[in-house]
Length: 120
Image 1 (cartoon, rainbow, N blue to C red):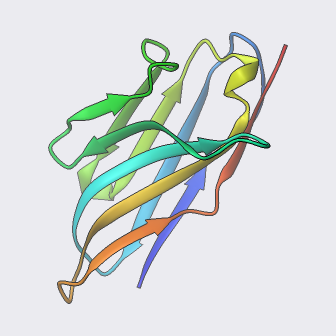
Image 2: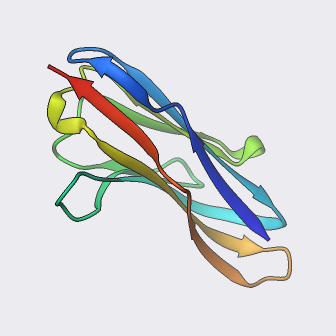
């Protein structure tokens, strides 16, 4: 059993910063991919940033230069540092974790989401 739990959302003014955290816990053999996605009202869920176990990351064009993804492999934790936030960054942010369980089965799990609201 694996759980994925996000934290760190909230309300911030435009230009401000927030840091999101996501922890994957349970019987994990390897955690190969962790990503942050977001979904605004009336829109589809979209990739914000993702990072592999080797530290290779990629970003949506809309957040490049403002957001930074990082991970602590020892803690099975991924972070999303969000700077220079804009009202259009307002959304529910979801963490996605993919890897292999202790019994060698694969998993692909989502967290419950954390709300980020940027006021103008």
